[in-house]
Image 1 (cartoon, rainbow, N blue to C red):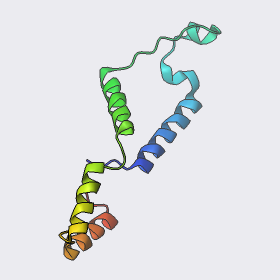
Image 2 (tube, helix red, strand yellow; image 1 turned 120 degrees about the horizontal axis):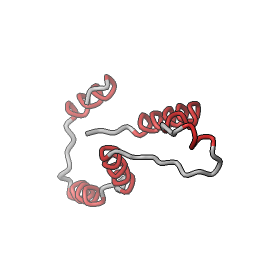
Image 3 (cartoon, one colour; image 1 turned 90 degrees about the vertical axis):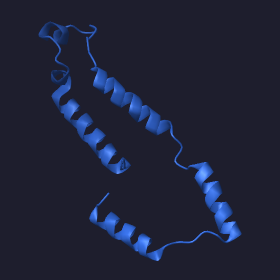
Length: 101
């Protein structure tokens, strides 16, 4: 699965803008709780939302560089055994340009 960070960031920004425009209306807060200053607001998060939040946290904690893969590629390059298939590179470039995954 491929996650594009700019798209994820844009979605988060749009959501935050929408919540800001809606104010407390987006939290399904009772009218008396809205009127009371400093009152606690009861917000319930679904199990699915908690799972998505946890998955997001794990992705954020994952290293951007896979050191084991980098070391293996460096060893192949040093040994002269690393070869690139130009046709495969061209195919992947075209797929990326078209948005194919």
